[in-house]
Image (cartoon, rainbow, N blue to C red; front, side):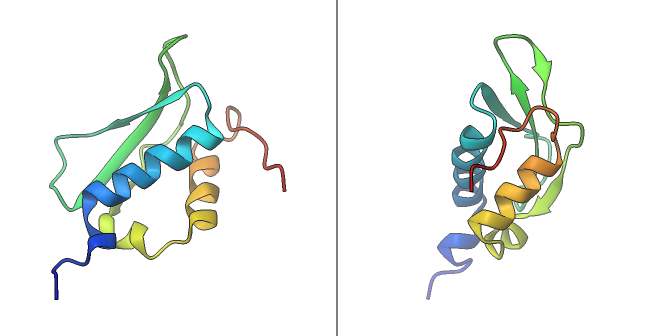
Amino acid sequence: MEWPPAKDKPEVQRARIVALAKEIYPNGTVVFDEKQPRSFIRFRIDDTQTGTILTSAYPEYLSSELADKSDDQLRALLRAVGPQFAKRDEK
């Protein structure tokens, strides 16, 4: 058995954050804090066209913590850190 499980790997969760952030912040670019230990994921979302930082918080999570969240839960988290710039939920 692989350890950590593939879903817990930081690379998997980073890719997931990037993909889901594109849905919510179409002009956004996820910027990861590379100074964090490998198992921690800390990020912000910037609009590189305007130079605006779109998220007011810089959340920090263990990759395994993010792996336990559904896509809908992660979308809600992404909206919560930059609600004024987030694309509205179309459900």
